Amino acid sequence: MPNIRYANMCHWKAIPYRQIDNFREFYYEDKTNSAYYSDWDTILKYQSALGFHGIEIAPWDLADILPLFGSPENFTAFAKDRGVEVIGMFHGAHASHAADHFDEAVRSGREAVDTIVRFGGQYMNTCPTQNYCGTGPLSREQVQQCAKVMNEIGRYATDHGVKLGLHNEFFCAINIENHRELIESTDPKLVHYCIDTAQIAIMGEDLLTFYNDYHDRISTFHLKDTGSARQPDSVRYARDPEIADDGTRWFWEPGLGELDLAGLYRLLKQHAFKGWMSIEYDGSPDLLASMALTRYHLDSVLRPIYD
Amino acid sequence: MNSDQISISLDLINRHYQEPNRNRFESRYFWEELYSLISASGFRAIEIPYEPVWQFGGRSGVPMNRYCVETKYESADGYRAALAERGIDRVAGVMFDPNLFMRNDNLDFFFGASGHFAGEAVAHAAALGADYIAISPSPYYGRAAHYHPDLEAKSAGFTERVTDALRGLADKAASSGVTLVLRNDYWSLFRGERILPLLDALPAGVKLDVDTASLTIAGVDPAAFIAAHKSRIGCVHLTDTSFVDTNETWKTPNPEFPEHRATQVFRDPGTGGVDIPGIVALLGRQAYDGPVVFSARQTRDPFRALLRIRTLLDQLLN
Image (cartoon, rainbow over all chains, first blue to last red; front, side, top):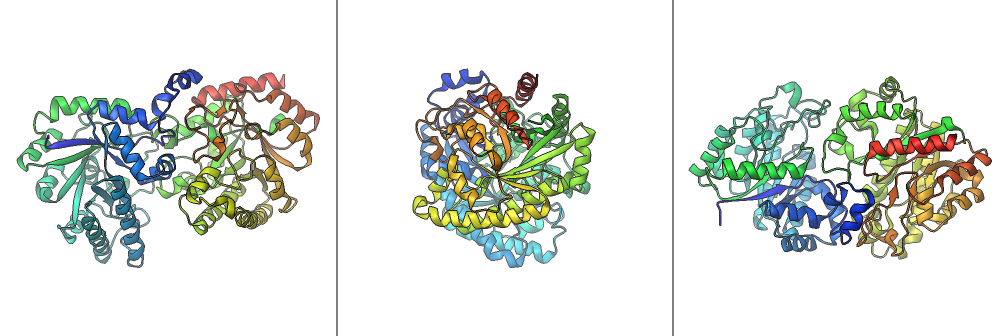
């Protein structure tokens, strides 16, 4: 068993079919690539063929996945038949900085944990609250309130075999000025951390320093590159920061940005990291191409350093 | 048919299924170029499918709801000015379906959320100066049945709540100067002629939205339907299909994607089996002068669809 196993964070658009039985007939309807991106059977085969044996699902996909497969367990079995296991799910802990939202935030977090358990996953990567714009700056008390919610959800997750990993976006109300304060306000036995390599770099953390400082808290990674580290407040606190009006991409495939991912892998080796790492392709115009490029970079550059 | 009344629906861009790319169709640069391309294709009016989902992420350049339009253009007027700069004179209508909110077994949630956002859609339509707001009065039958296996037993109560909600929307639309029209989607609890009793229970100002492909899939001849209900028609969607529903696909949870026989249910107008020239001629004979919308829902290639529709329209008008 390698030290690191690789998964894809699910950024496919809604996939409307489980399996296309009449693939050739479907293709001949329009002779485009739509058949190649329309069923889970094919998508999961891409993952399996390229050595991504895990998938991290997105909560916004549940409304489509559940009616399509009938239950989380059915989806998991279907994926497993194609060599892919569900490792976890993303979760947004909306408004957890607000004291009067405590019960709702905890309830929602617990429900997400229950969903992950049904999918057979073991990670819940949780954004601690919403965007900075309209919310920030958070007071010291509000940061502590976020920590309180994370601890409570983390306790429930731990009891159910799931690791809660904080996952911060560069545009969230938990931002560079309170990022470490939140981490250090949570219980290390209950709340871990998922390093999204690009998100924290854009926010203003130095990737290698951050990993060195918190290596014993790290549950998993969202691995992606960026050429836009250390964005100013005007970008991170903007009303609509994620999808740039001019098509600027914040996120790139490993090796196509400027992050020192080789340096990260040397630190992974130094700290003997073992576990799952998800690759994220949000921003890519072609997810299959991104997956293949990533596999090449992993095999030729990163995995020889440590795997 | 008044050719000035012809618009094209922005449902030809479907972020949910077209291309494996989550971002391009959400970016402002994409839409602002698209408006120019629509104009270059000879269309000067658009229809907007209202989609609340974009609001929750607080992002994107899509024009699908009031929140997004205000984020990018400050106001509906700012958006209309941006359209005008690119050759689009007006927003003909706004279309809303409640499928997003059929996601659990709590009908109070469904009616609460869908009612709230349908109201937002009416306000959006009014602010944009639209002629109509087209409402799908039901979620996918199959999606509702997934979460409510006793849907048939609940149907009378469900219809009653739908009727009450639509009465409120009808009042809001009327006071805003927008015509409320009911869509007869083939996947609906009120498909085909089942829409008629619902319409009867509503104020006279509420009209029918005739969707030609939906009627065809539901087994209703659209020309006969138009002829029979001409005085009640408030909007016509010219949609096309070659799909024959032999396996009750309309009752499945994802009815636009037929299980076990993958196919494109809606075809680009002019490439399916609906007699669109015949329907256009009929509307002309009836001196129908209301809104007519071309829709290339589910298209594999929005830009090709745009030009295909233009080509068809040129043939129809000449």
